[in-house]
Each structure stands twice: as structure tokens, then as C-alpha cells.
Length: 541
Image 1 (cartoon, helix red, strand yellow):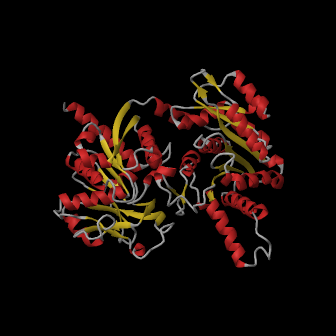
Image 2 (cartoon, one colour):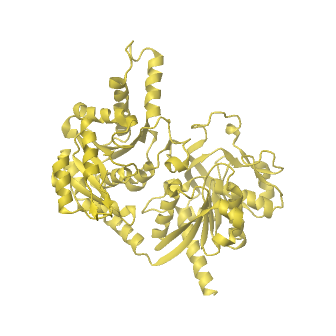
Image 3 (cartoon, rainbow, N blue to C red):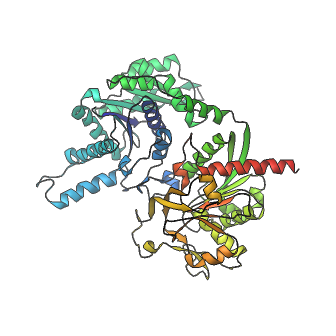
């Protein structure tokens, strides 16, 4: 079967929901039996998202093969329940880097003057096709990041315009996501921004097949007719993208409006009926749970919750698996440093310390972990959360005053966390960490083994530091269990405290492998333990 392409663009503002639209389409088409590939194009010049601050771009999502990508790939994987690869995230930096490398090689362009058209656009199209081939895709859905009209996005719009000619119009569908703002002063939805957005898209040579209209209110018949008339699409091809209580409702709302049928019709494919019963059950469990539990997430990027997007979603999945609504208290670790943990943690049923970099707020994380350990409060640490747990235990249980990570104190008298051996002399920062999926062997009978129900696992990593093996004997003698290690035993992957109701931390980022209908074992275990803690706490009052 010839691969078909769905090309998703956005207008008016960024962050409008192109990623969720792409992920929803992927789910609906996969549930109709099609093999899908999902691709995110980011027009920034960075080669990847690895060195972009979370405040600027949200979390860095890591794939099995170690690519540091845009957070939308997390939505893609969660919705279609398939691992993606580095081919699924294309950036300006990658495209120009590859073209320049070919030009420097001397043979590839055979003396040509290398230009944006055709050389850059050809490279973009080849990157898209490579991702489709990698997944043996029937349908490849490509999201173009940014907003129509951005200078940096112009080569990508030109490339996808050319694809209609290259592939044939029957093999290409353009979906444009735009905003219908509501002006409270006149109490009216406005279509003019969307009209201008489509005009900009048409000036780039692209006529959208479907228009998805983001709105916080239902679209009126008048709105549908205006978008149809001024944007030159049938009324049936205008899809309402109304704000939802949770993002897992969005595919069902789009299915109700027939978006997948419209796409398959444009591509000349049979539509069929999707199997969405489990997804409907998921949404029901998220919306109407029996229980409610409060979890504190202690980090330092709390002003932008997208910094921990996958962690938040993993907690939602774990809540659904435990028939509970998880209420997340986002706690700034610097505030704990100033006011102490009691002020922020006394009313929660569990604590999660996620990953991060740099020494800002570290002592607040350590204090939160000490509070969890001493008060038998369920605790889960991720990546840096494990390292902070080791630091806390070394200081307050082993009596190693000043124990620290060399990342935060190179002169610490007790370096319980040190550089990975292969990282010690690395000077280039981009793409040089321990990245991607690595195997781990679990200790029989440990909490980790019980949660995973396995003796061997694989998790994704993103770090430069590890637990210092020279300190392991002392930590173990004081009661810490290293319940997961690399197959060779030289890297600590999981720690736990067996005399605590639920205290476990991992060097990995398990949030990247949690799925809506298959909550990650560590998160599922945290919520189960928090519910038990909450029940015991109430019964003791």
C-alpha cells in the first residue's frame, strides 16, 4: 500500500493543540486497523530539545533510542501506544546540518549551488518519508510546529506543499488547527483570526482539507458557515475542538464529529469502525472515580507544569488504574528551603520528586525526602529524585555530614553521587548524556520486583551522574536496598527502604513508558500506597 500523508499545521497562536489533534488522529486511524507513523517537525535551529530550558519548551521527552525530543512525542506514544524513534522528531538544526554535511562531502550535490529550494525542502521530505518507512506506515501524520506565517517555518510549509505534487493529491490531506477566540466584551466568538490564518496558509500554496477550530465554547451554526465560506472548506470539514476536562476525551469528541472518516475519504481509504471501548472506559474512570488522593510533586520548574508533563500524565494513568482522582500539589522546592517541609507536605498522602538539573532547590528536595522517610509517607523518586534520596539517607541515617553529589558540590567530603565513568571527560553538552532505554536486573523479593512482576526490565534514561559504588556497602549496611542494577551490577538503577511502607526511587524516567490503559508499575504502586496511607490516617483520627 502506498503511504498516505496527513499534514497538520496551526495558526493564530502556538500551543493551540496541534499535538493532541495529531495524537488523536493517530489513535482513531490505528483503531481502524491502519499502521500509523507520527512525526513532529520543530522549526527551531537547535538540533534537538536536549539543551532547551523547560521554561521555554516544556519537558524533554526521551525515546527508546535515546533521542531528546519535543514533548508532543509523549502525547503521540501515549495515544497510539507504540514506541517512536529519533526519526519522529525533525528540526531545522537537523535538516540544515545534514544538508551542510552533504555539501561539505563534495560528491552529493555534484557542484550545485545549494539552496533552500530544492535542497532543503528535498531533505525535509526525505526525513518525513524515512519516518514513514521506519514504521512501515499506511498513514504518516506530520505536525508542523509553530504557527503559519513564522519565518522559520516557511521551508517546511513549502516542503509539505510540494508533497501534494510528489505523492499525488489523493495521497495527501491537510489539517489546519486554528483558534476561535471568545471576546467577553461583546460576548461573541470571532472567526477573523482563523480566516487570516487560512489566508496565510493559502499564500504558502496550501488549501486545508479540514479545519479544527479550538474554542472554549460550542461553535454556533453561524461560526461553521463563516469558516466554511471564508476558508473554502465544506461545513462538514469544520471540526469543533472545544476545550475538554481531560485530554483523553478529545479523540472521542473528534470521532463523534467524523474526523477520521473525513481523512480516510480524502485519502481514498475505507474507514471502518474503530474499537474504542477501552478508551471510553478509561475516560469514564478518569472523570468519575471512587476515590481521591493528594500527591505532592516537589520540583523547581513549578511555574510551567509542562516541565513535568509526562510525570503528570503518569499520575493520571495510575489514578485511573486505582479508581482514584489524583490531585497534584505542585510544590516549589525552593519554598521548602525557606519555610520547611511541614508547611507544604502535611496534608498530602504521597510525595514524588522528579528529575532535573542544577543545584537550585536541591536542599528543598532533600528535605522533602527526609520528611517522607521519617513520616512513613509514600515516596517515589525519579532520576535526580533517586540521587537526592541517596544524599538524604547518607547524611541523616549513615551520619555522613555534608554528603552530596559532585554535581552540586565538587569538594564534598562524601561524594555519594558522581559522574558516570564515560561522562567524566565529556565537554560537549548536547546529546552526550546516558540516553535511551537500558536493561535492569531486579532483586528477587524486592518491592521493585513485586511492582514490576518481573526480574528484568528496561527503562529510559537521561542523566550524567550515578550512585558512587564506593559508598554502596555503607549505605546497604544502614538499611538501603539496591533493588535494581545494570546487568553487570556496576550501575544502581533502583533503591528502596524495606522498613518503610513505600519508599522507592529509580535512576530512570519511567514516566516515559506509562500509558493511559497501562499505568506504569511504579506510579500505580505509589497511588495504591497513598490510598492506603490516607485510609490509615483517617481511621486513626
